[in-house]
Image 1 (cartoon, helix red, strand yellow):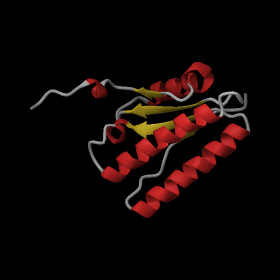
Image 2 (cartoon, rainbow, N blue to C red):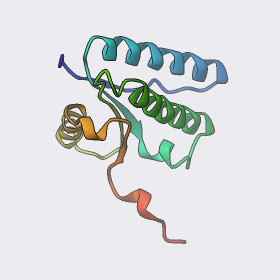
Image 3 (cartoon, one colour):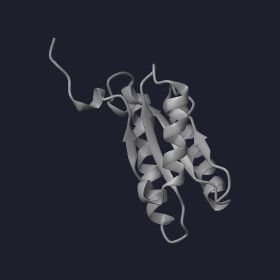
Image 4 (cartoon, one colour):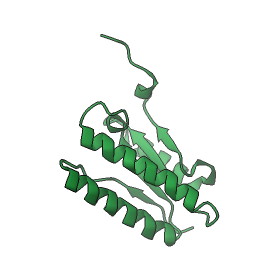
Length: 125
């Protein structure tokens, strides 16, 4: 397996930028996976939860769909592609450890791993 690649999407502020970023992500995944490199897509947890900007949430969920579709499409070819959501204060070393683990694991291909525990529920204030 070639070197892994982490994909960090660009922020989007318009529907045109959303379309362009999803296209950029597709092309990146397509090239990396065809070259034998596993890919881990990095997503901010608040965008996965859809608690802030609607376009950022749309991008995050479009990327999750792209990860799942690529995992299904590339199952027989041995593609490794996953998504990892993180909190803004996630330690870089911890983030890199998870990226490496997800990239190396065939059994997590197509998965979304969510760090931080904020996705477990909220207490009404």
